[in-house]
Image (cartoon, rainbow, N blue to C red; front, side, top):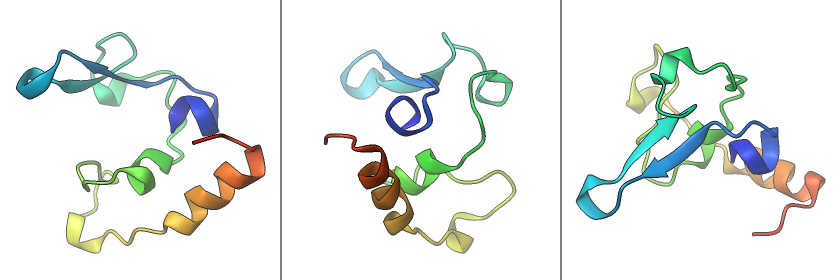
Length: 79
């Protein structure tokens, strides 16, 4: 989502299988990412709910996939 919609290449997957994990900015701590614009699109697009806005409980999160879908449509991103 970061690269395709926001133009910021923040998140990457490292390793495979049970060792897979998400890293940011060449393995920097997530909170220290300089490329992240804090737009929240990754939180909205995460299919498992593993990402949450800082300071909010997961139960409080309301997914609005329409927002991400609209952005994808506006920018003409191919799935």
